Every structure is written in C-alpha cells, then in structure tokens.
Image (cartoon, rainbow, N blue to C red):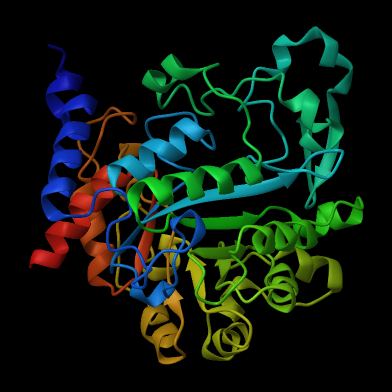
Length: 387
C-alpha cells in the first residue's frame, strides 16, 4: 500500500460508509427535504425551502466528486447518496434549448475535440470580459450536442472519474425535470433541484435569454410556485430580479470574491462590488427580490495569507437578520480545495480533514452548503446535528 492510500480512506470505503450512515439516519434520497404535504404529479408536493434540513446538503453539479459533472449519472448518485438538493447549471443551445453544463465552453467537459465534423466550430469568444478559446454550446443545435459524450472536467484531480468518460450525454433541463418527477414518484416525495442561470447577460445579448424559456419549463412542470421544490440562483442580480417577475419559485443571489462585480453591474455601470452587496444595505436590497444568498465560503470565514481560516465575518448574522438563508459554496474533499489548516499530507489530490472544515463552516451558522461529495457533507452535517 502506498503512503497516499494510507493517508486517506479509500473512496469506495468512504462512499459505502456515507451511504450506510445516511441510511441509518433516515436521510437517504431526499428524506426530510421539503414537501410536508401529500405529493402531487411527479411526487413534487408542496413545501418550503425553510422546511429543508439544516445544514442543507446540495449536490454540487450532482455528485461531481465521483462522476463527470452535470450528467444524469452524477445527479442520480447525488440523490442516491441522500443529497437534499441536486444542482443544475443552465446554458442554451443554438436552437434555444436549455442544457446542463457549468459553462458554455464544453472543451473540457465533452469529447467535442474528438469529433472532426466540429473542428471548424472551435473559436475564441469573450464571455463576461474573459477571452476563451474552445467550443461553445450556443454554436450547436441540440441534435448536434446529443452526439457528444460527457467527460471528467478535472482529470488530474479526479483520475478515478475518468472511468465514466463517455457514458452519458449532455442532459437537457427538461430531461432533468422528467427525471426528478420520475424519481419523486418512485420515492414518494419531491426531488429538490437548485438551478443556476449562467452568463445571462451574455446570452441575452445573443438573443438567447435564459429566464423566459426557464420560466416556461418551470410552469410546464409545476415548479413555478413559491412552495415548489426548486431554488433558482444566479451570479447576476438582474437575472434573479427578472425571474422574480416570471415565477414565484424561491431565489438566491450568488456572490463571488469581495472585489468582483456582477457582470450585469459591469454592463450597466453599477459601481457596487460584492463587498458592497454583503453589507447590510446590499443585503437589504437583495432581500427585496431574493430569499437567500450563495456566498463563497471565504465570505463567511476569510483565510489568512497562509490559507488558514480566520475569524468569521458578520455575514451570517446580517443576512439572517433580514430573513435570508445562506448556502455557501463549495466543500470538496481534496487537499487542494480545503483551507490549509485542514489539509493532510503533501498530496494535493488526497483527501484532507473535510469533516473538520465542514464543522468550522457549520459552526458559523450557515443554513446549507454546496458539496462535490454529498456523502461526506451529509456525514459532517449529521455529526454537527448530534452535538
């Protein structure tokens, strides 16, 4: 056995322990996940995001620590592990369909580079002020995208995930809604989804606005109400405000680094930064059209120059004072993604003390957390709830 495998528990053992642990705690599937009333068509039921367990565990792009992200395989594993909510990011196709990809650049998440028929589609674009060279969903019809297969985005960090390269297609959001309805009927309780509009100003400029087709799908599948088992999110407050006019579904504003500005602010000339938005006045403004915020973990507990956690900010208390829930991002098992005080050994790809890191964030009072490893986050949440 190598030193690396001695440093961390095996993935399979960790997976098995987590699934058994969550089953014993009664949180498999979407147990306890909102929907206190009787489920309706598709097992979607009626409930409130405030009925979700605290801390809420959100499967970040599914169970992306174990399967290529934003595939039905990743979503299914997250749900089977017990994630309370499963996340999707939405981008459009050339013919206006919404598909699940973290970015419209699909170079690193599909086998598009292996398709000679699409070699001429490779191009350079400026997306939210950043020049990117690759292949982009808005240059493909849905039929063309369906000829591609998904693959692991960060194979150097997650070599084991490459085993599943080529197994799944890019799912449409409508396929995910049908999957959630089917799983809801099978489980007898609603399957919660967490849905992000990606680069909405950029796509609106191309005539491919995201909010209207998204709202139509939500209405078609009965997820447009205030008590629907779905949360909408965006890094652009303008997109969240637009969605608020279209559907009553709960909404969250995502917040990046304190010095950054939402791209719709850049385009409109709004000088406010994220640092302004996390102040009481900014939080009050967001509370006028959103029910929560999704800050980076660093906005909850900053790190010092060596990457170690420092003292929590007042963000949790300030947001809670206005009735906002906080779902920060992103908890991952690997050392390279953890604060320095929770890394173990020198291998950046090995698992660190993610349970210790999770406890620090839970103790700060957050309401939930996005995690690439839902099984681990569920165990951490169960430990915290028992104390």
